Amino acid sequence: MIVIAALVIGAILGWRRATQLGGNSRDRLQYAAAFAMGLGVIALFLTVLIERMA
Image (cartoon, rainbow, N blue to C red; front, side, top):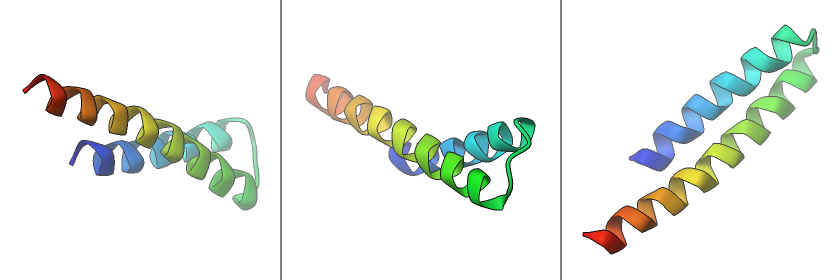
């Protein structure tokens, strides 16, 4: 669940960031994908860490 939420939040943040910078639709999609992947990886490590500690 943490990973899915991080992917969605990352995509939203990336889209907003590209919009602030004045990017076109391709820029927005690229930023959304990059942010989603970055936050997804962080959330995956966090999930593994939580599971190992439990």
